[in-house]
Length: 567
Image 1 (cartoon, rainbow, N blue to C red):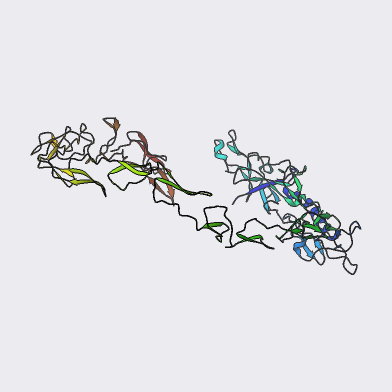
Image 2: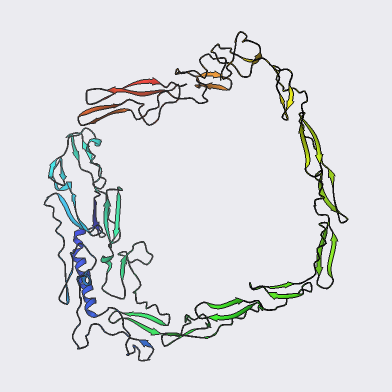
């Protein structure tokens, strides 16, 4: 559970704000009695000019008797927890009873914290004797014995840093942080969860009792006063653009007619203007879009509408014979001359006055012959140059078919597969097929039964120093081979640099990877975690501290220095 302690913005205990809360309640009750509630429209003008929607005085009933200040307990609530729950008694508000915050412990400072809406009891070590501390549950108790400051830390930030009096070997309480700020409308709290002062705005402390100036606590606002309070809008807006809204402290809200521009909700009118509190229509909206292919109309809800038609029109082109609206708002011509001569090497067009024209072009084209390429138009004709059908494969015969293009037919020509251990190689299926040959053997310089794939010979049987397996990753180190299962604490060098990859897996694999080693107690028993101390295992060949077990004395940790092994 988090614990927040605090004082009011003026530095006094939060509990001392109760008189301010009572004053705020009195102002609220006075405002309710004066009738500053919601506004209603009346016949009497504020200025006698006949242009104001007046407000009736709610403080007087129809029979001349004074109206009730409240009807429910909610009407009387001033929003402050620390002065109790106000109630409606008959027609008048009754002040609440402040909560009882005394916890019965003499050395705790008891207060009501408005920002938390709860009581707070904060130990005050200064109310105890020398070398005594205030316990929130037991009162003043003897300070713990200590050897250093760390022995005295109670883990709480809001009561300051405890220290050790090394002469008396007793803990001395710390000094609580000063959380008072410059604003009287905030509760100056200390937040134990986040270890910092946490001033909390309390809006109700800013209330001035005037219904036309609702108040709030916002010290960071540019318009905030010396208390940190600001005035917010009165709430008299009647959402009518044809009235100017006002608030009077004695009479509440009232609304004066204006002649402002407005929107009457009819999309078929423009230039709407206010008159006698109502938005009146202006002139009609012009919906003509100058398009012969739309029927123009106006809808009061949506405004101008343009319905597509299919009537006759004129597209302005001499190359069309019959023009008609396409039903999508465009004029489309049809029935014109067909100017396509079927030749991709001419650009066909129609001039508004001269009709069809066919101009030669130099566009890319296709002459229909698959044995030519880079076809292009010239003088109105399409032609290309012969392509080369060579796949650079000795085992195919290359030719060209005008319909399908290049053809690569497999042959059975004698060939060489590039392997000196085979003879009588011949083409088959478009590739050189190896002939009969001898098995391949690989040098095993380190005699570990695994050979070097880059050094080989062909022979009927394995020559001395050669094996059939070519998977050795380092043929100069006997311990480095794919079958290695042992672990090593030192690296070996082969080729580019040092490595621990003794099993040729392509990675340095560590033997011991567990971390977080130590001893812990639970239920009176001591449990060891056999692992490296800390959060990371040492690198290959590096030393680290390994937890080997726990001692019986106070569940101590037994360790050894161990070198990380890898393969």
